[in-house]
Length: 74
Image (tube, rainbow, N blue to C red):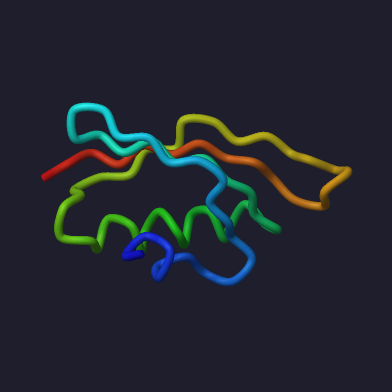
């Protein structure tokens, strides 16, 4: 719920995996800049110290991008 509450408008999560404290997120966004805004918001959560963009790909048919982000624990 905390992650979802931090998502800016136009950003969605489609997958979430946890492995040894690292949280791997995948999703879609209308704009690449919104993914950056989401990453900034995620690192404001008390449990995470850094967000790393793993992959981003333009999706012209969906008018946006898909992304993968990893959150590092504190």
